[in-house]
Length: 107
Image (cartoon, rainbow, N blue to C red; front, side, top):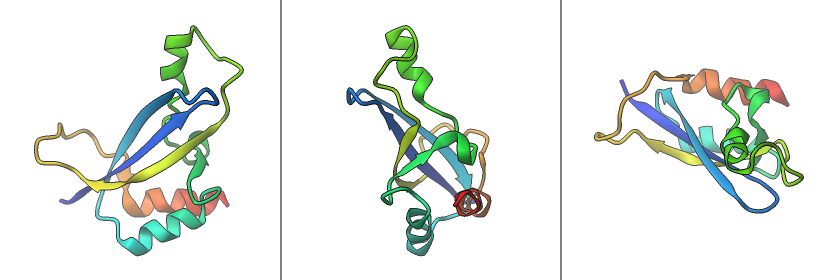
């Protein structure tokens, strides 16, 4: 079965970044990506917890000793890509349809 990777990042106000991804079952079309962007703030930003995607803030907190004044709630959509043959296969987060539905219900 085909799998798609949703890549995203958290960038605090100091421009420190933490990258993350979730694996989805199924393929994402160009129309799917356009539809997703319609449900993002400025076609890029989203609050991870509002759609059930793991927040990446804690990765930076591990380096800073906890939350800082540079923190905020927004994560950034980076893109979709296919799962590479040499990547470790992990348990899928869910299907592409379920994933896109969470963004549609958020707005």
